[in-house]
Amino acid sequence: MKKNIFSLIGAFGFTIVLTGCMASTPKEMTIDPKVKSKQVVVNQNYQRIYKRALDKSRECFEMGLGTAAIIADGQIYTELKEAEMSIYLMGGLGRQMHHTAKFKSIDENNTDMIVYSYFGDLAVDQLKRQFTGECISCGCSEEDKGKVK
Image 1: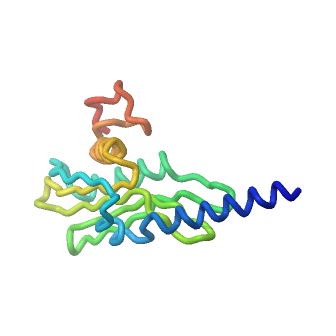
Image 2: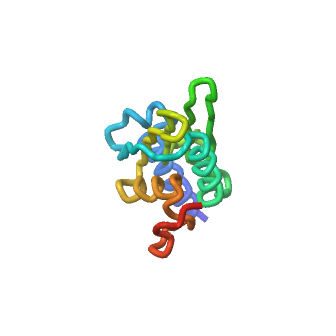
């Protein structure tokens, strides 16, 4: 019993340390030097990319984790022709951002997209491919290349 209590205390302490290492808002995330990002111009309407990004993120990332959950959430600003979405862990210690993307209309058919992630260049590239429709599976397998949904 004593060992379980110490394990629980250790896990709780480790979670507190992790919480301090990640941003709790998209804005904080975009200025964190530990975050990787990629900016691309996509030949698609910003609303279409935003909808695909949010739908695919909900399909691939959302899940419950006991007392926490991974959530995909977004906002669209039609008057500004901009949108943003984030994937984050929400638990008893607050919100920890994992990935964020911003979409800004250049014109009716072109969008400036920036993807941010705490999980490195590979994660940024995979998210970019999912959001633009370059791949259709959650893992962006090799067989997905060239399949636009």
